[in-house]
Image 1 (cartoon, rainbow, N blue to C red):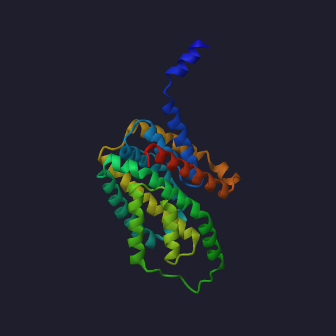
Image 2 (tube, helix red, strand yellow):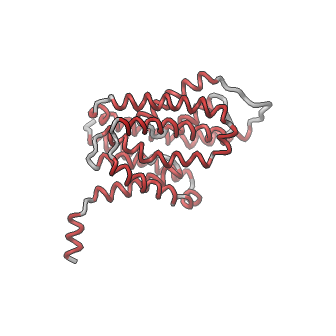
Image 3 (cartoon, helix red, strand yellow):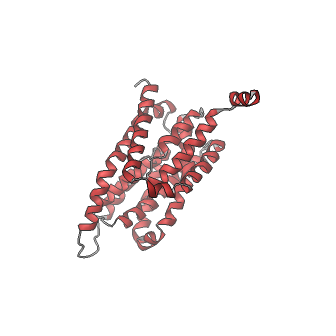
Length: 268
C-alpha cells in the first residue's frame, strides 16, 4: 500500500490528463467535432506556450482528419472538378492563417484564446438548427438541372474560412457547410465531401508549416496523436447510440466552459 501511495505521489498527472483529453477529443471529432476544446487546453496544461500548444494540437489531430477523406472517397471523386479548386483555396487560406499565427506574440494569442473558444462554441450551438434547415432544403428542393454557383466568390470566401482554420480552426467545418449552402449547394453528401477535402488540406498545410518552423512539441504530439486515434476508432458505437443533439450540446457546454475558464484565468 505504501508503494502504491508513493507511486501516486510521484506520478505526473498532467500526462494522464493529456492522454484522457486527447482520447476524448478523438471521440468528439469522430462523432460531432470540437475535440480541440479539450486537447488544446490539455497541451497548455503541460506547460507548453500558447502558439506551440496550438501547433502541436493541430499536428496531433490531423491524421484523423486525413483518414476521414476515405469515408467520402466516392463523393470526392464524383465532385473532383470542384474539390481541386476548393482544396487549393484551403491550402492558400490555411497557409496564410498559420503564418500569421507564427508571427503573433505569445501573450497576444493567449488573450485571444477565450474569444476564439467562445466563437467556436457559438458556431457549434448554431450548427444544429441550421443543419436541420439544410436537410429540409435538400429533401424539398426539386432541381431542374445541376446548379452552378459562382465559383470565384465561393473560393475567396473559402480562403478566408481556411485562414481561420490555419490560425485556430475549431468549428470551421460547419462554417464551410454554411458557406457552400449559401452559395447554392443543397446535396449534403457533396457538401460534406468538399468540406472534408478543404479542411484536411487547410489543416495539413498549417501542420506542415508548424513542423518546419519547429513549433511542434513532439513527445506530447505523438502521445496525443495515438490517444486521439484510439478515441476516434473506438467511437463508432457511440456515434450510433447517442443522439446528435446530445453530442452537439455536450460539445457546446465544454467549449463555453473552457472559454469561461480562460476568461477567468486571463483576468478578462
